[in-house]
Image 1 (cartoon, rainbow, N blue to C red):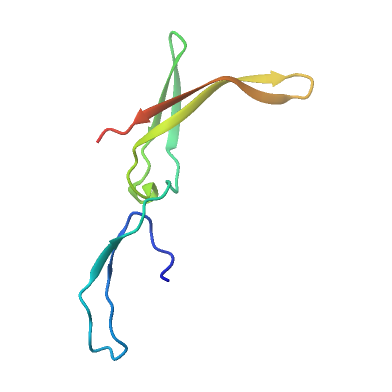
Image 2 (cartoon, rainbow, N blue to C red):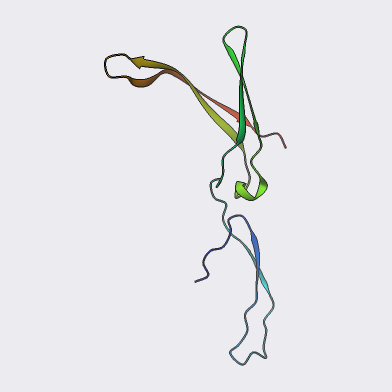
Length: 102
């Protein structure tokens, strides 16, 4: 087994006999995609009129994508603090998804 390969990467594989004299034609293999290993940076949230928020962030660096990046998801919710035990709870959560333009 060959380990520690990067996701979504093409590798050229050579096979040689133990004599070292015979080298067979190379084979090309692509590793499977994986979930991103990083997260968007520099998140900026701007409140707009009418209860709208604008979310902006720096794109994920290519080396952290680990394959095709199809979009982003954001979950927004109102935070409620319970005074008796100072716990926090999100209520009325909304999930949104944004496709990546190509």
